[in-house]
Every structure is written in structure tokens, then in C-alpha cells.
Amino acid sequence: MTTASNVLWGALAIGVVTGMRSMLAPAMVGGALAERADIAGADEPARTLASSRVRQYVIPLAVGELLGDKLPFAPDRTIAPSMLVRALSGGVSAAALAGARRQPRLLPALIGATAACVAARVAIDLRRRYASDAWLNAGLGLAEDCMAVSLANAGLHRALRER
Image 1: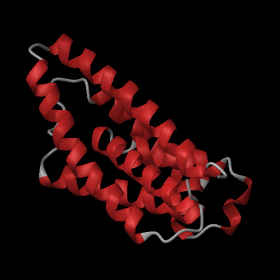
Image 2: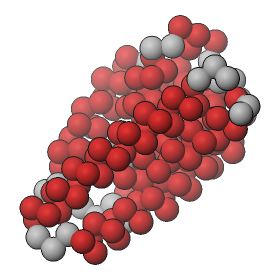
Image 3: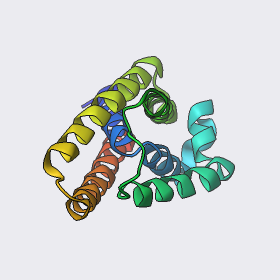
């Protein structure tokens, strides 16, 4: 596989993760990029997400979202403001991945934003269908967290590998 196709697959994975947890993708992308030695030569979105200043805000937001999602009064992830944040988060995170690999950013950003919106809708529909009480909803939310972290790791590994 080429670097470009790896970046596109990574953008898709990161977009889906953003649909499930809007702040998890930028936190994980930023952390993965911060560990790379060649980030200094990357473009602005990649350097910004990898910066310690941005990560000091994004990581607590991601942790708060992971905890707050299980609460019965958590806001609906498919309302317009939430979808806008998810689309922006998915697009910026995917663009940062592409920029770190010195690839064009527009297509990965569009893939990340679109995947975030679709995944948000699918994930909440599945949870609503199967969560009949608060405990089951929390359990499904925890399973969703595990899937999101696993998918983010797989997408990052694919997008950032050398070949």
C-alpha cells in the first residue's frame, strides 16, 4: 500500500472515532504526532495538534467526554452544534495525519469530517436501539469507548507507518 492510501484509511478510521468520541481523535492524533521525531517538518495542522499547549486542553476534554457519555443526561451527539464539532474535529485530525506524512490534506479532511458525521448517527442509533436502561447504556458506552480507542490505534498505525 502506498503512503497516500494509508493516510486515507487512517483518515477514515479517525473520522469514525470522532463520530463516537469527538475529542478522542484529536487527543490520540496529537499524542501520536508528538512522539514522532520528524514532526518539525510537518505542516501546521500536524504541528498544532502535536503541540503541548493544544494537548493540555484536548486530553482533559477527551477524558471528560469518555466519562460524561455514560451519564443519562448527556446531550445528544446528533444535534447541530455537536455534529459541527464532530465534523471539524474529524476533519482537522485527518488533515493533521495527512500533513504529518506530507500528503495533500483536503481529501483526508473531507473523509474525516464525513465519517465523523455518519459514525455519530450510526453509533447513537445502535445505542438507543439496545440500551433499555441506564446500566445497559453505560455498558454499551464503555464498549463504544473500547472500540473507539482500538480503531484510533489501528488508524494511526496504518497512517503513520513507514510503508
